[in-house]
Image (cartoon, rainbow, N blue to C red; front, side):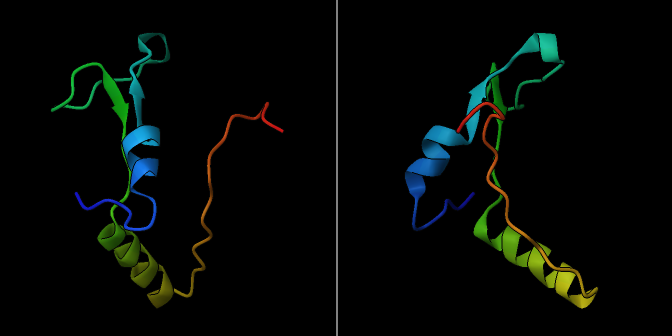
Amino acid sequence: MEKLQLYPKLVEIGAFREVKKERGEKSLPDKPGIYGGYYTQDEIKEIIAYAKERFIDVIPEIEIPGHCT
């Protein structure tokens, strides 16, 4: 997977975390005990192209806990 070119640490630090089995999460096949992931730049480009063909706007979102201010 290619990482974000501008912010590689965002992927290294923020894309994965430990599995919380009480939430029903499952480990990644190649990383036992780890949950998460990210879209590569090519995947994002593919999503945007797919949406554009169907007149859909893609709006980026950054997930943060609801209690952050």
